[in-house]
Image (cartoon, rainbow, N blue to C red; front, side, top):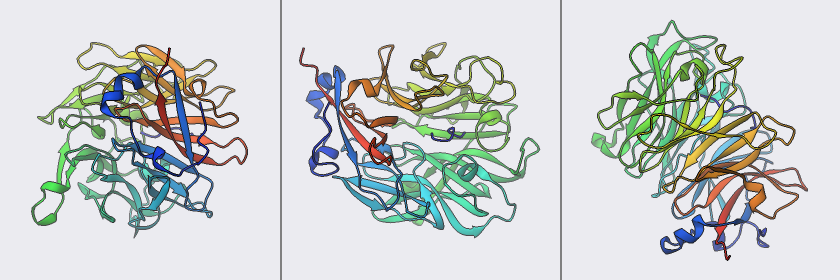
Length: 408
């Protein structure tokens, strides 16, 4: 489940004022969806390094993501009104929000190094997937952050866990190691893992309730990547493999309220079938390998897809001109999908897909020489966050892009 390695008007007051966090009102939603352009605010507020990324944006415009220090470590972070808050770690050097892990109440989920050594010396999803910048021999755990407090999420008997998504009921999804030495694991991975739903709000005496989501019959591993407000989760099922996509994503799956996995359609390959987000209506966006050279061996040749709830097949989103690869990261209630297209001479570029039409988000803004590298999340009023490269300094910052209604 890894993401491949990094992977209008520029506001005069960058990162300041109400523009960062003020969403369009509900009555303006129709106009927003007809937008022909976006107003972009890039946020320079950082933790001292040159890399920041917005990974999630909620209904009030609060953004969660991560920011680096000058030494290279990164911490999970929140931005409100252009001001950054460091969410800290679970005792280790780095933490991050790797998925759209933020709900409307401001609850944040992600992963963090702890200060505890891993007795099995596994690489695990956190480091091997490039979500955390340095390779350590420390246990990595999922976390939930609320009201200034970061709490560690429990495993299923193993050492590591990974939190990916959270809904407005406070249900958190991800994956966690079991205590089973799984024979389908490869490389440095030893213990098997399963998809998990954590329920901090429903645990007796403040304890976090943990519920396992099984893989498809015949598979040994599963991982959940997103959950909607109806409690419907999506994720992957397959082999333990390296605990980072590939053969662990042989199947894209959906778990309904009964917790039973149902296989979702894919783009035709055998590996890397990965749902990334699910909206309130049950529509899903993600990426998937098509059939082709390299796919059976687990090479990443994936492209973005959209699955309308109940459809017999997925809708290919494709790539921007000149690119070979793409990934969809988020889908909102209006079926707008955002993500990244890459693998060509132009480098990474953020995209917006809606009503069957794929657009380079850079064509809908006026920010040159800056470049929108990826669009990581979109809220239901169409406001987008992600990463932008400053064309002058080379810094990679987080941005917020607000739709400007089409006046024609």
